[in-house]
Image 1 (cartoon, rainbow, N blue to C red):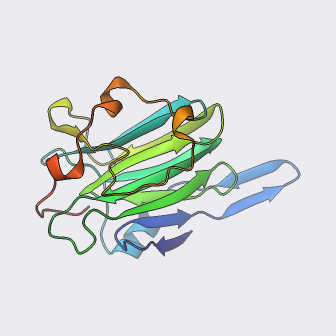
Image 2: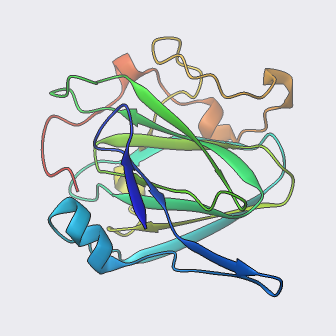
Length: 188
């Protein structure tokens, strides 16, 4: 397993080792010990989630406030997405900046997104299956979001805006300047 810090060092790409031959492949998708060794502490994931989406579906940008804030470990089982993490920690030098990483069934990459980040993804292939672990349970009263098209963040989703498919919730999110965000606290 290889761990790669992104331009926002708290967001980490994980590249698992894939063992493949003519029969198919085998991959360890999660190793608590390896993650602990890299970070210097353990994250205790409590819930796994999965979604299936068609091309152009955009989910996000979502996060939960404390005490229900979540660290996420995201990956694609089938298909391809552009995955995005936005730093919403007001005390961070990278506040308002984002990282975009392509995750696919081919590259088997995963993205570790700590608390204090809004998360979203756009689907780049039909029938994409997206899965992720979280270290806190879903809490509707702590659930928040930021507009996917906030010009101050400037995310290039890589999909024509006419092809995007969003939920009513995601079309009515606020700009970062109006959002409830993080003012410190535990990162992971």
